[in-house]
Length: 50
Image (cartoon, rainbow, N blue to C red; front, side):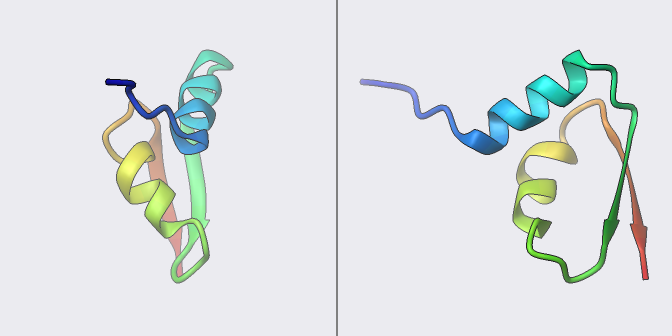
């Protein structure tokens, strides 16, 4: 069975490789699912604006 590798996973891994340490986001934006599923469990810290 193939393991599903998503664009969200790729972006998160690539941002970590490039040395991204912090990600700023706006509450209610369209990327909230990506942040919750991929960024939160990664080494990248998140800051949410209001």
